[in-house]
Image (cartoon, rainbow, N blue to C red; front, side):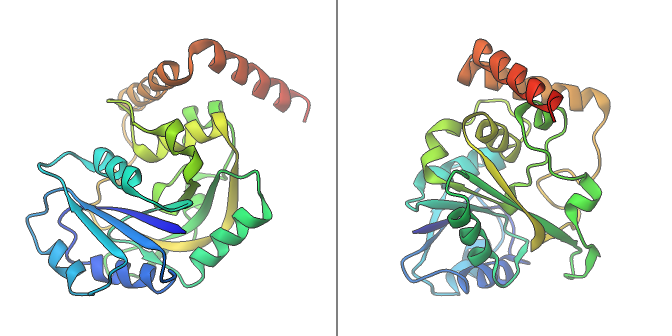
Length: 251
């Protein structure tokens, strides 16, 4: 069973486009868990108009922010594989099939991450590859603390990993960075070097569009590291980082 986990907030403009692109790829026993963070527009009405029983809708009692809302969606999901999904992107045909194929071909993979095209508010491609701009995906805890390459809307994770990364620590730089780094500690990532979604950038995204200043970047890295120290312990982190450094030295 597949669960698609979506956090929404004032997304009426694009949500039907995204929902249609997702639902067309799901089976009758799959689900889309939509948690709304108290939208003031017609986001939930747009979702309801599709009249699809696979959409399970929940609404926060008050505005809690994107990370908390994704946490709730992930905790409510019943599937074996959990896809993260933004309200304003577009899933390209074949995305679900390709991701599930990757899980099947790599039984030890606990997370699958794909490339994405960057599109504008009208759906026009403005960059053919997210990783062409961000830099190639590099696995490992240390590499992704220094510069995270995990893009939440392009990720899917096995449900067995959920107890490892939930609940999210109170202060993390983003749910996708946290899930990705925790997965690198306990599991393995399979990267698909082809764009499977259109990642929409329009100025109102929850994630920042422009590179943040050095001070903010350092704060985020400390928050990520502090969360890891609390979750897995400093000794375990030191042991893993030493192992990964040694592995790179022998390559």
